[in-house]
Image (cartoon, one colour):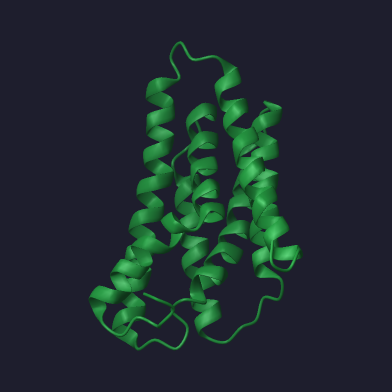
Length: 180
């Protein structure tokens, strides 16, 4: 959108679809959710929990509720998810659910920055696009991982976790070091 707030339904929809894909930290977290659900054989409601929490986070931002340091928390959530995947030990569903819910609020809050001040139609379209793309990426990744996991070593998911750590660390440095 070139830095401008979406003004039409189409602009809002495209912005919602594009935002999580062009933000490497957000994309890495969505892929992490899919890897966790796919490798662990977890219920696909976990990715939905993140998507719902992120929509709530957008609405909190749009309604003027302030989450200081949201981008730092987003970067830390990516780092944490990558670490948990790379270590190769299972967590309980409840711990994953808590991480996805809290991270969803902060990722959504960060997404809300690009739609803050928009009229109702572009805002609703943005949320629709955001929900669709996040659901497709997280659930699609989970289903792909389940399908491909037959005959694939545990090392593959651990390496994916390491790559996610790299994205999270890069995002965190970008937030903490001016001009990095």
